[in-house]
Image 1 (cartoon, one colour):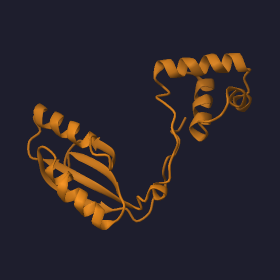
Image 2: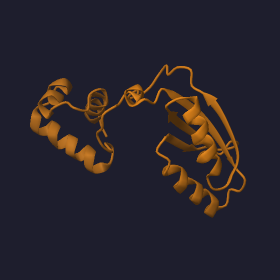
Image 3: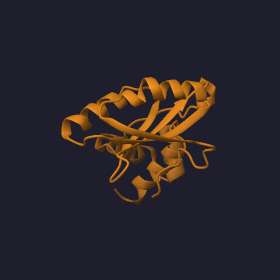
Amino acid sequence: MDAMDRKILTELQMDGRLTITELAARVKLSVSPCHRRLRDLERSGAIRGYRAVVDPSALGLDFEALVFVTLGWEDRDTVASFEEAVAAVPHVLQAQRLFGDPDYLLRVAAADLTAFQQLYDQQLARLPGVQRLNSTLVMKNVVANRPLPD
């Protein structure tokens, strides 16, 4: 990946709906080479997809929490079962496996505190292998959906 590929990626992270003509103009490249580079970035997996960034409030999801998960066992089967089950919970926006304690960090969206409590009690606490959950409420998102640095 060279500097031109990085420019293309930067522009697309800022606006994924750019036409190839607009993209080429922004990175100061003619359309054909820009299109070829874009296809190569898509094929290589550097660009994994395109999507809309939706305001959670538009869907009534005004409540966000970070949930720290500690598993009782960390054997292969427990980890696989937990990861498969947590991936099936739609309100879990992000799940990251961590080194050390806790084992996982989940970013969860809900309509309100009552909805979060129900999700917590009925789904998150019942995930396979969960020993302990600890959550903190998000007051405000200061940085979100930031493009990756060059």
